[in-house]
Amino acid sequence: MNIKPIETIYKGYQFRSRLEARWAVFFDQLAIKWQYEVEGFQLPSGWYLPDFYLPEQDCYVEIKPPHARPEAGASLPRVYMAGRMTEPCWRPFRVYSDYYVFDDTVPSPVAKTLEQTILYTGPFRTELANHSFLHGLDSAAYCHEPEVFKRSIAGIKACEVFFAYFSDLEAYGTLVEVGMAHALGKRIVVGFTDQDRPGDRWDIHNHGEDPASGSNDLWFAASCAEKVFAGSTEDVLVEFGAWLAMNYPVSREIIAAGELSAGKKSSVCIFYGDPVEAIVAPIWWRRYPLGGIPKPRLAAAALVARQARFEHGQSGARM
Image (cartoon, rainbow, N blue to C red; front, top):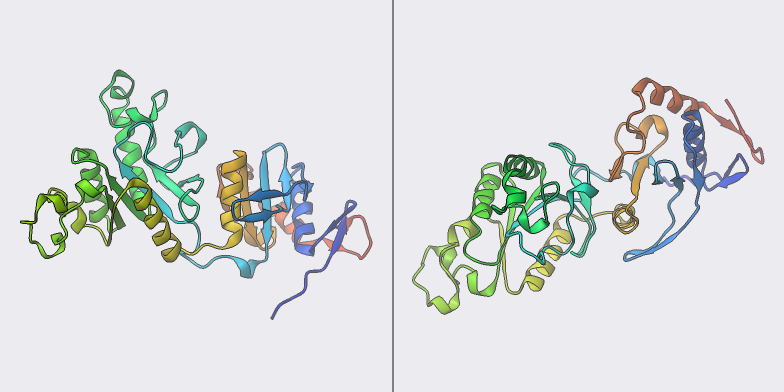
């Protein structure tokens, strides 16, 4: 049953729903400055008008009813994109670790140029080192190799989809990563350039093909994958993006939030339900706007917001 939102006035703002007004009360209880529908954006996926902007946190907030929460597996896919680290990077976006917060459990958001936005879990460059140095032995990266290894392992563990792109036959680290992803039971997709793809009959273990049909050196890596693409870098990425879109359909608000975060370099958070329901399971990009606030204080403010009573035409709420 669809319930029509009740327009509600609070502090001079006419909110589109009582749910949004409760979030304004919640932010006030926490002394968080907020602005309502302050700015809209033309994004690749269309027009997007976030509900709130929190200027001190540089965070846009979208409020959705609890029944709109995506089912498990319907949020942005967490993807690890392995392959030789060269300049310019073959990946369809720039990756700099100082733009993102990353640990063993929280993947980092990256903008799309695939068919959809993804949560990129690695690999990342080392601090103070150029992206191309991540797996190299230059002086900048050499002293950071333990950190490189730690981040890469954490990223593979955090991903849902492991994608490896082989642009030559010497990506030795990528081969190790493929094996680790396979051992962890990850979904693996592999892309090859035309000249380095396994021969046409690699999947039936016949490796006597004409070398013109491709290399046979990577057939074992291909055997680890559930999907294999071959062609130019651009073609492989387009096919992989289409595969992601088919296997991980994403709601429009999640796509738009990811695009906004990437384009504005701002945090974006989606809450489903009132503050009591939503603060325990938000979907967010870059930085969680309520991070650092003690849980008892959050819970108390959420309860006040839920219990707030609004009257039609009134410019405030009765607590």
